[in-house]
Image: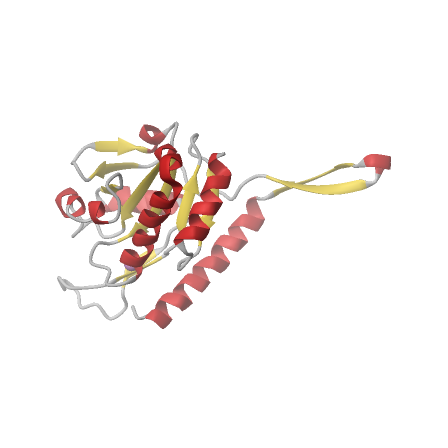
Length: 206
Ligand code: NI
């Protein structure tokens, strides 16, 4: 997946997310001062939800294990040549910029390539980005369910030969901020800078 393909793919996904957001945003009408009707938008995008996966130490974990902490979630694969390392570096740097506030936050990397991303593989990968980063993988079905919950799309790059050991995975490259009850708070587009990410997160942690 070259840079241009990634951009096009991300734009397509962004449109899907925007559409989903609009659909699930609940709009209610109430009466403002003087009785004039006003429209108040409430609700959250329908992103996130239950997952059941395996962490980089081989332990079974679910979304419930993260309750009480904010999660910063990114889906990708360890063989990704550029986008994943770049985005995970941003997450790590944002954590550093947050200082003590980052203690309320767990950075989570969820693999969309369970065939190659074993717990052992993740264990050798995630600490490079942040010492507290949690790597998650699982069966193809578990990963598919987690990705579906987050509205993450992924597929083996078109043109991959069947059975090829060396392949790329096209995937959504947003980073999701989830609240302590597992609720969706915000998503960051690819190439968001660490300072911008940290500032936005700090606003939710305060
Ligand atoms: Ni990637």
